[in-house]
Amino acid sequence: MTDKIERVLEQYVRPEILRHHGNVEVISFEGGTLEIALTGQCSGCASAKFTVEYVVEKEIKKYVPEVDNIVLINRVSHDILDFARKVLNKEESI
Image 1 (cartoon, helix red, strand yellow):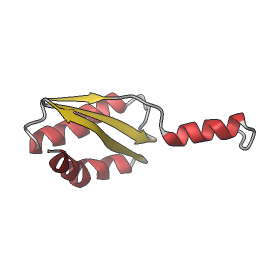
Image 2 (cartoon, helix red, strand yellow; image 1 turned 30 degrees about the vertical axis):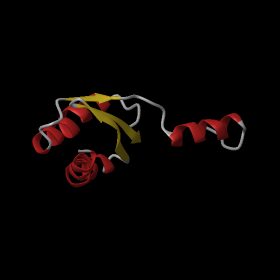
Image 3 (tube, one colour; image 1 turned 180 degrees about the vertical axis):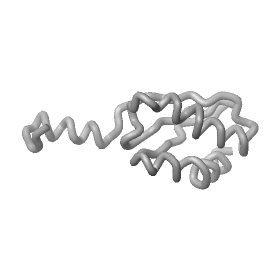
C-alpha cells in the first residue's frame, strides 16, 4: 500500500509542494491512517494544515481510497537543525 501512496505523492502531490521548496514524507500507514511529515520550507509552515487538507488529502483520497485519515506529524527539519547548530557554534550568522 505504501508503494501506491508513494506513486500518488510523486505524481500529483510533490510537484505542487516542491514549488514551495518543500516535500512530503510518509511516516507510516496503518489501519487506514496515513502519517506524514512536511519537510523543507513546508516544515513548520503556518499553512501546513491547509497544504495537507487541500493538496495531500485531496489527491491521496482520490487515488487511494484505503486511506481514511491523514495525520500531519510536526517535526523540525534536518536543514533547520543543521542551521541552528551552525549558528550556535558561530559558524554562521543570522
